[in-house]
Image 1 (tube, helix red, strand yellow):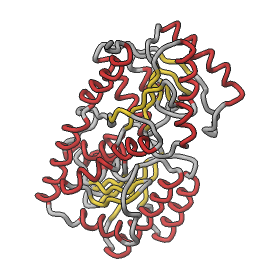
Image 2 (cartoon, helix red, strand yellow; image 1 turned 180 degrees about the vertical axis):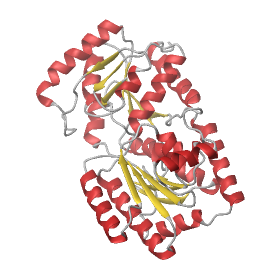
Image 3 (tube, rainbow, N blue to C red; image 1 turned 180 degrees about the horizontal axis):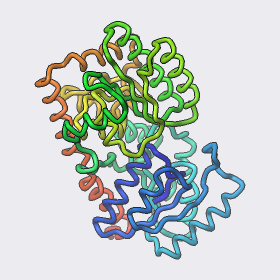
Amino acid sequence: MIIDQFNIGGTETYTLSLTRELIRSGAVVAVAGKRGKIMDSFIGLGCPYYEVDFVLDNYEPDVQNAKLHLDVLKMIICTERIQIIHAHQYPSGELAKRAAEEMNIPFVFTVHGCYYDASHMQKLKPNATFVSVSPAIEHSLNMDGITSHLIPNGLDAVEFSSYPEAYQKYLRSKLGIPDDSFVVMYVGRLTWEKADICKDVIQATSALRKKSGSSIVLLIVGGGIHQEQVEKLVKKERHQAGDSFIIYPGEMLNMRACYAISDCVIGTGRIALEAMACQRPLICSGSKGYLGVVDASCYEQAWNSWFGDHHAANSVPKGLLTAHIERIWNMDFEEKNAMVQSGRSFVMQRFHVAQITSKMLNVYRQLLFPKRD
């Protein structure tokens, strides 16, 4: 398994879940990437791990040391007797492909988002097997002449589940959040479009707070290159409100606890899966569009667009985000409970990591043991 860096993000946490389940299934897995905040989680799996600085501290490719890193990858392949390379990001994926070609082993690349340059995909295309995580990405790759296996993200049913109500209250008390507060949580990398979405969420919750005069708390989880801009906006809104109603802890590893604290989650992609698995009401606002409150009526639309992250018809209409937060706030217990129970069932039926890993193993087997005519 190769990623650019062991950061906290949807691609990296999915790779962690997949690696864990592959090991449970009897596969021998080694991982490589630049040191980051979740590297210890990979180390905890007990698999061989290698620190390779594919990217610089500004996330740009380390072009100067590319040849060195290629040689390191080939050494890892020999040392660990690697039979297949599976990469998840670019630029590490390009080096991984070159290593696979030079060592004559299969190469798999999972496309996790719509942010890849088409020219990068064309570089990887020869002799590569592609995996797409949503129908929108599968379609996008097809338009570029690239076929792929459609295999979504997978979640561990135990790792992402709801806590008892008493423990949820305890977690809130640790942050000084009153029991009667309505907690909105935004989760995402604070880069590009998602930083703009975060700003929309801050403004929406501020407007709702002024309108209702009630206790509303906003929890922002995530980091990225636009983190400083978000921090300035948080400081400004706190000052204007005369209250620290926005909590910004940055990046967090224990996301299950964060979901437990919240009454409403705003996110997209893997975050949406995790929130639904933890039985939290969900509003999808992603890089490529806005879906709004997610319930059984829009599951297929959510899946096709990867919960707004890969494709959706609408941008965030002004005022609608506030209205959707308010809608969840005013839901009665029965309606809200039915919605979150349905959401967890949907996620466990479609995205359980054991099912996803089984599909991935089938791809590996087809490459290692191709059928002969």
